[in-house]
Image 1 (cartoon, rainbow, N blue to C red):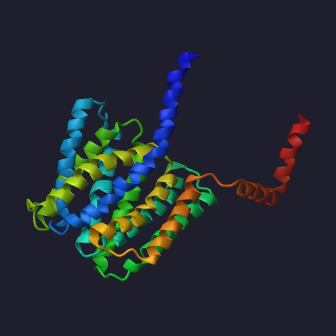
Image 2 (cartoon, rainbow, N blue to C red; image 1 turned 30 degrees about the vertical axis):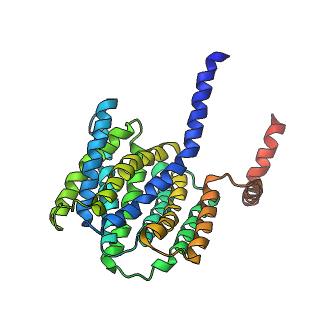
Length: 329
């Protein structure tokens, strides 16, 4: 019997990691909006984006050199990583920083980015062939409504159509990259995947920065501290945690936790950016938490019984046939 103990312990560790993972993903990934908003006070959007990817790429490649994992083989394994790097790194972060650089508040930017959760949950049905029950779909919608309520006070701040387009482009990039990563990157080491994504993103953002003021940044704490946070914590740790979330949880679960990032950002904005904690934020937080619970937790028995009763009403013949099968046997 003792020979089965290591396997049981391995299962327990896997279960514990799966449960703890979202609580690590939320603060680490969500803090990037605050750090990015602080960094944009001293740096241009694409200059900050380039240095983020360049620094993070060096760190990740050092980890890869130490771990020596297997690299992708053939174009069929390489092209999804390259496209994911373009979508999640360049489009998402370039779009978010451009929007905030044009004056859009971090809370409003994260609200628009939160719409990616609905895109992921719905897109997972045709792309990943995941089942999205009415209960979980309601949870995604409720969570998104909570996000909108929490950040309603920020919607009147003008940033121009370019800023809105940039923020929505970031949401589309995150959703598309997440779906492609979950569908195509099975068996690829997480560190190798993230490292390749940074190698793709760095030269592209360098070119974009060259046309928008260059890549020079001031060597001051106001620039270097936010840059260090988004490069080392958000990019290295955050991207690895995103890969773990996509590997161990469904797209709907990731969507539910992503719904909590905008309210979380708004809470952090109180001490770091000086934004007031409004009543709308408190109400929105509660609604978003309810939506997350609807997706993550199983539906109550009353809901399952109601669904079975509705199925029996819609298909009474099939229900009778199922009841008669044991008698025939």
